[in-house]
Image (cartoon, rainbow, N blue to C red; front, side):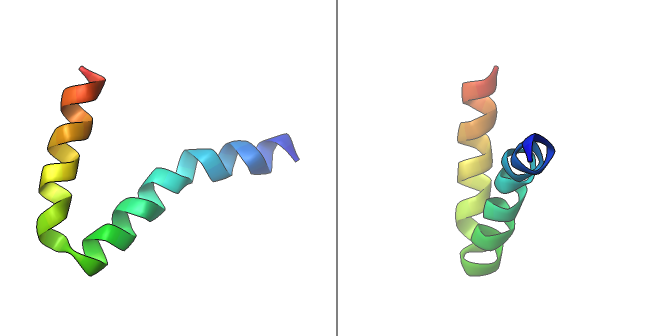
Length: 40
């Protein structure tokens, strides 16, 4: 069960990004820039 939960949290960002990219491709570049800025 722990492995499933870990996989879910690990893959969730990728799924969200794919959904955003499908709906609004122009938003993704801004979002990605923000995430990279926050992570640094």
